[in-house]
Length: 467
Figure 1 (cartoon, rainbow, N blue to C red):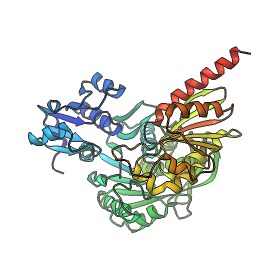
Figure 2 (cartoon, one colour):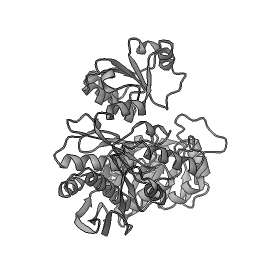
Figure 3 (tube, one colour):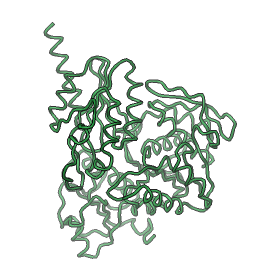
Figure 4 (cartoon, one colour):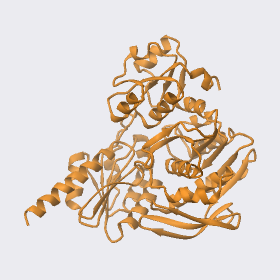
């Protein structure tokens, strides 16, 4: 690593795109590390207001002069290299760090645990953080979603541990060099960067090779790709988890309920207690098992870890209840890959009990939509009905013939509705007491959840006043 944390202390670090979940979290940690933080984003937001409140100098516009006086610049790979602040930093020969490199520097003085995997990273990172806290520790953390308990996605703790969500989307997670790591699962995604499933596996192979030789790897024995990589990773101590009978941390006697789940935890054949989680779905029980395994690998006591997991109530945008009107529950979820959608809808159907599951889905990125159009259609057809919005392109240009309509055209229970307001009105009109409405996707579809709640409230207010 070219720079250490001491190189940054007392200096000014400028963030381009500081309003993003990952970037804002790093900025908050740096402020607590006696680093002068400035930054910019395309528009003002509550995130920027929060950063200003702790002393960061934040601008709601990208301008070249924002960079002047900076000692370092941190950028997200989503930022265009033609950004005026990137150009000015290049002209001034200001050292530039990717988000992953900046996070690696912050992790470097701690016993860091990087949580990687195609699905479940945010929830598993959050669960591990809460479990460690329950052991009387104060870990630092940098997570892609907001912890419900703390209201934050990042924190500079006083303890020795640092839990970091390791994003594989551009291969940059090889910069972290953690003490320990969790791999939840491995699947082809981020097709804009990874052309083939084999290239994804290669990236995870490289990531595992960066784990400290005296550290550990935790992997899911139930996931074929994660298990295959785990079994051949002889450079570190390995621990597996899952339903698989060969797992070091095995779960059995599983009971899934509408709002959570629980199972017996067996550590190398011996019962160590019961995992109980208050978020629905078998996938979340596996996430909890992964967090518990990592906690045990760190030498922390099982009773306290299990107690912490039982207090976990989720993270932002991961099956997050946004409101309830007349028995109709509105849930917001980040799921944006067919496998994630299947897991989320299985949980939603159990959560709905006798009600229906109605989905407003926004495809994320044209490349992903093109690669998985049939799979999206098949997974969404698990719902009772879905309204498919237009693709949220992120940084991508449109691809001819690729749209939300290309998904809905293959569905039995899907409607293409590119207009946000129309989609809200239609799902509210369709819903009846007992149903679950799910806003789903990684783009700005989350903005619809509070609008749906408000529209439902108006609908039933009118109906009650007319009686």
